[in-house]
Length: 393
Image (cartoon, rainbow, N blue to C red; front, side, top):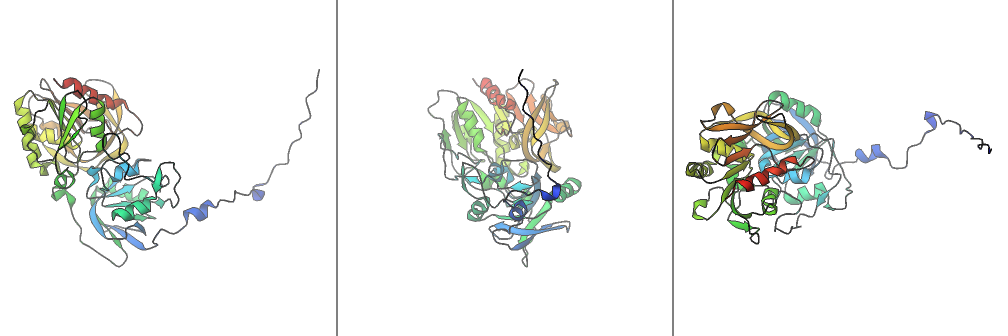
């Protein structure tokens, strides 16, 4: 029987003797911003959050909102639903994986990595900016991309305190200004933001498909909505927010997401009402599309205190015990108590009970407040595109 070799124990090292690797993390995170120029984020209630600027160091005004997502800043910053807003990211480190190639186009002629063809946020406020990028898709840094896009950012902000302040006081007007400069507050919700982000002219996607023809009413559409419809087999005609789509031959109407107060999109609401009155046109809406469908049906909408902007909003399908984890980005909601006869709530938010979707009792009319095309993790709501396709003749 062989004897086990004697194990020689190494002497334990004292904590005082331990040496970290040569990479100095403290020095890395303490490096100055690209400009080093001080700036201030000023809220309309007088609160101020100081930091240093990056991106393009210019003064901007808008509505300050926060997002709790751990990733996806290129997609969020190009989401038209963020138009006119100063976005606060609560995740402590932003920019570490850089920015993919902004010129890359997919097989459908759409931006491959972004949700639109340009940056939509008015500004970005973060805790810490990563100065170096590390990802195989990165073509440039976040700072470089924002500078090229003419959008300012501020880092060194206590985003935890800022998010708590917004949760308590509500989303409010704000301005980001370099030290020594000032501009007036500006409310983006009193302007027609939809008209600013909508496509300027009609355009077809998926023309080689042999499936049904779908009109996508673009009130600020994320490109993954188009991509999802085409992959589901549809031929998609993307039209401007005020386009008279009844001049076209189509099998179904799809209502996109978008920014601001839905009541500003008056022409869209009027055209959707015509589709509802027709009775036989299948209609499906996402996010702002949920609110536009409600207004066209005769219901009302209202502004949420601080909105739903996250990748983990729980939504319950009414009549079931099933809860979906969803991605959301909206500051307004449908008042479920104002739904006219024949309409029912389809989904509700498990956190605050707000409306998350509508359905008609017998007409092919449905909508959701969340984003089934946005899948940072769960993909179970992608099935809603299949449900819409099944509604079409």
